Length: 258
Image (tube, rainbow, N blue to C red):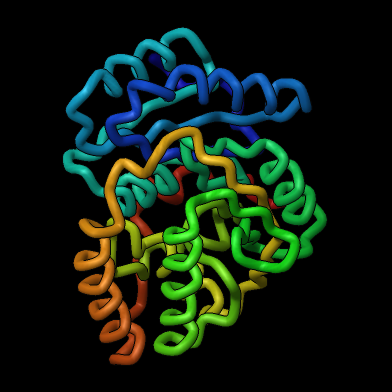
């Protein structure tokens, strides 16, 4: 299917993996909410290695909606799919969303700050004062422990890195290109490197109400997360290298000025 004719203001990038159970309903709710506020947007469904009907459903939805596009990353890799979605995004602003969240309220609040130039990146924090995290206690504690580890080892100054975030695409492209890890830790690296690059990063509280249990358990995620954190620490504390942004990532940037 061809992309929307006019370049949208906002690109919503959503990695999806084995989401046949909630994909159609969640996308419909998201688009209805965004349409209700008159936004110019596109949704990129960044499928990665799904073994169920996710690909077929995503392709059907893209055929039905002019502002929905799909891409397929060759393996189950949240970070890889998210990175590729950011590169292929056409909007001036990008929101990284989750298919089990699709929080339109966050989109609106973050977009308002980006439009006013108050920040170049806005993080939806589920751990800061004012947030409402309804996940099980074990996952809430894991979030706090993980971000505490990021603060202790990498100088992270905030309360959350993984989940909802919005940013000015052009400002973040060199940061995206400099990231060295993928999977879950890519989302954290993106925030940490944005801070270290001197970009303006702010947090706003969000309410988290997931529509289904995580597709990967904490037990399976922890070893990979720790391994990628080690790789990230070696990269950040070692010699720095210049990042080269792929040509396909800059194809839509010639008219990024407000």
